[in-house]
Structures are given as C-alpha cells and as structure tokens.
Image (cartoon, rainbow, N blue to C red):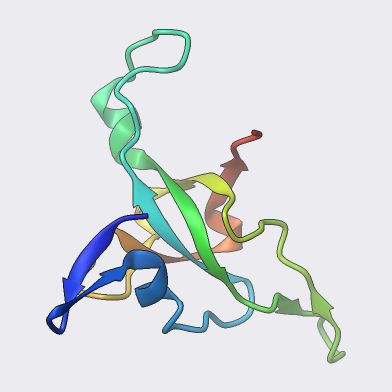
Length: 114
C-alpha cells in the first residue's frame, strides 16, 4: 500500500481510488513498476515497456449490460488482481496521482496467475 499526502493527511492510493465508481465494464487500476526483464532473465525492449504496463485492480464496475435487457455481464477480473494492459488505453483520472487510471476490461491483456 502506497501512502500519499492528501489535504494534510496521509492517504493510500486505494482509498483515493475508492472515491470513484467506474461505470459498466471499466476498472480502476494502480500502475506498478514493471521490471526491465522477464522472470526468466530476458531483457525487455523499450518499445515493449512503453506499449504494455502492469497494474493492480483497485475498483471494478458492475459489468456491461446485455443488449436489450437489464442483465449484466460480470467483469472477469477481481479487485486485487495483477493485470497487464495497454498503456495507450489507460486514462489518468486524478491529475495528482497519475499512477491511478481508468481502463476498459477489453484493454486488459492478461491477469497474472498467483
């Protein structure tokens, strides 16, 4: 948990993210620094690091509505999941905390298996 000073008091990024409610199939993520090499020791090229990022799901929306009904399709990630996503798709939602972003479930490439 990363703490930041917010209005004269320490607050976690998770607390800040919980102040937002994503719509439909959107999730709020916290970027984490991805290592410059794979777990097997392979160096990752700069272009790879710029196009993909790693993050942790902090808050998730209720899911997409099925067309023509009021039934929801649940999101396939859970709060706390570590995900790989396209950096081009993530939107910063808080100018003071650029590591918190809004992302559509469609832009999540994979979930890290624990």
